[in-house]
Image 1 (cartoon, rainbow, N blue to C red):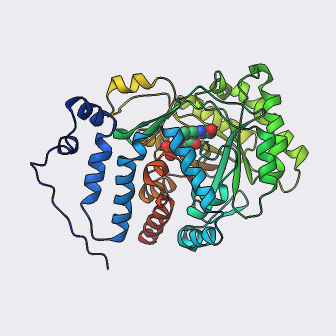
Image 2: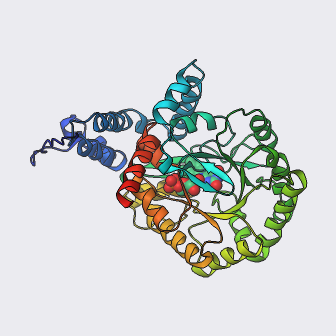
Image 3: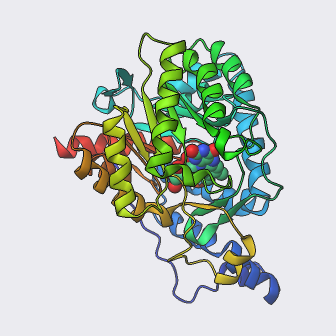
Amino acid sequence: MCVQMCVPLAKSQAPWSRRAGLSKRKRLRGTLLHGNAASQWRQSLVPVDTLRHLRRTLYAFFYWLVLSRLPAEWVHNVAFGLLRFAMRVPGLESMTRRLCAPRDPSLAVHAMGLDFPSPLGMAAGFDKNALGFDALAALGFGFVEIGTVTGEAQAGNPKPRMFRLLRDRALVNRMGFNNRGSAAAAERLARRTSKVIVGANIGKTKLVAEEDALADYVKSAERLAPHCDYMVVNVSSPNTPGLRDLQAVERLRPLLRGVREAIDRVRPEPRLPLLVKIAPDLSDEDIDAIADLALELELDGIIATNTTISRQGLHTAEDDVSAIGAGGLSGRPLHDRSKAVLVRLRARVQDRLILISAGGIESGRDAAERLRAGATLVQAYTAFIYGGPLWPRRVNRQLQTEKRAQD
Ligand SMILES: Cc1cc2nc3c(=O)[nH]c(=O)nc-3n(C[C@H](O)[C@H](O)[C@H](O)COP(=O)(O)O)c2cc1C
């Protein structure tokens, strides 16, 4: 039985920074950069008497105290490296899997000929080089999309290129497809021994001219198709110049056709599911046109959505947002638009395509809402950063509860 005990916050409580004895300048900076994390930490302290809340509070505190003050990309690399290292300790991966991996049959989804243990997947961009999909699955993700992988290895944009908007529980990134190339990713995937469902997300090498984009995608498709469970053509990242123009139907049609043919050449059986990932910034007419094209080309599905170039409705101060500069915004501010795109797509394609919804999914309730709105599966990235390693387990549990309440 879970008894909730609430500790009321005193109205007269001074802001966290004043209590911490910081200077006025630091307080201002702290409010801009960390203020909401601090208040979220305080708020999450309110219900204190369950282990679950304590764990969440501890991570929120650790995030506010330590992680949010370090460069976002560095934290990502170190944390992901530590996770992979920990999973090599004998027994630790199987123990983590036992504790966190989804097992409840109510969560299982059969789609694209695959059996997903949970509808919650890790979105592309987190494991760009196919280094840690087993570790991510052990934490509770039902599938992992690796990439974006490009035909050639590339360094991506200059650093810093990943930024937190703590008050919005959001990220802005302009990574620019930093990755070791499709040959390296294919080599890693070829060595996999687990049954984790892995999707391969492919994009265009920056230095390849736009007229040669198809050849670059085909190169990656041919290398990766034999070793993954589904493939995604990414034409929606805002950080590779000209990439999003490939979403125009007259350019997308030959690209998707070419990739499909390439896949079928190297892997006729079993047929590899092919999806396209779209941006949230498309007009409604363009969304409909891509949906119609996906049906015409007999694609398996659409992933909606990638990050947005919009900066509307943010709580972070405008100056701070403009100081960050260009990039794709992800997380909470993307929630409504991604859901609206999903609803539009489902209305257009009825039950003829798989739809994977990504963008601002922060909880089991959000995930359940997307599934009710027509998503076959869901993906997340940003909420995992803010929620910590136990976040996927929590979402699966919440999803289970939502399912039970629904039945
Ligand atoms: C740092 C970062 C890097 C990303 N890199 C990629 C990428 O390489 N390819 C891609 O298709 N999407 C990429 N994405 C977009 C995510 O896959 C996802 O579509 C988007 O972030 C919305 O989900 P979220 O709000 O749960 O983060 C990236 C997102 C972030 C935050």
